[in-house]
Image 1 (tube, protein in one colour):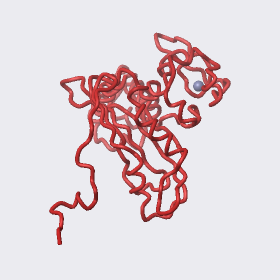
Image 2: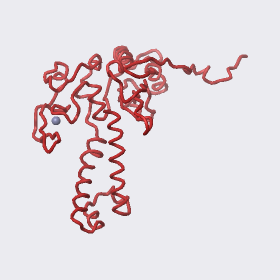
Image 3: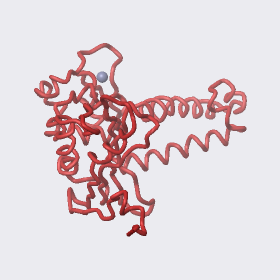
Length: 278
Ligand SMILES: [Zn+2]
């Protein structure tokens, strides 16, 4: 009997991937259908919904080259690892996101219509959400950046310039709807067409706001910086001031200086990664 020397022969593992020149870089589409079929194998799911992530990762500090993976996770099977669908590699970011996303969108369209084959039946598949940070979200949707006057992806208010920054009022304004997006009812919010419209999913409701950059690295970090700088300037005993913050996470650090250098470090790291995704 002929027994293969490598398990990949039995598992029919793909051993080579076609790389194409695309959107100013190189792109490998690893595919979604067979990965989803494998993921739902031996599960009892009757339908699945996908969480989709697209973001840039700097390759090194000394160059502007970066990777842009497209990843999915099945919401109903959180124990399964995220699946990489495609990877773009190049300088900074894809020059045209519609070209970059085209192989992914084409395959996903088929899956949304036909479902995923499992034994003798088909498992229905939907898009639950796109999980992206603010710079990636505006690139994918071809909308104004989050610091633009019409950059809010959830409501229609125009931001105001205050001390050189665009600020949004907390007064309630009309919410954006999926229909508004499709009809481009507020043209100043858009900078172009997005290929994601071909998926027929709500492009306002499937893009939730993103906690890490808005809260942890956004509002919270800004407050910490303002508090620490303000108190440092007043020359008060720093340990005493730090106690006033009374924020549990800061108690992780034993001294004020340690916490402050951590805060500065978080800022530098994030600014670097943001400039890479921008
Ligand atoms: Zn808003």
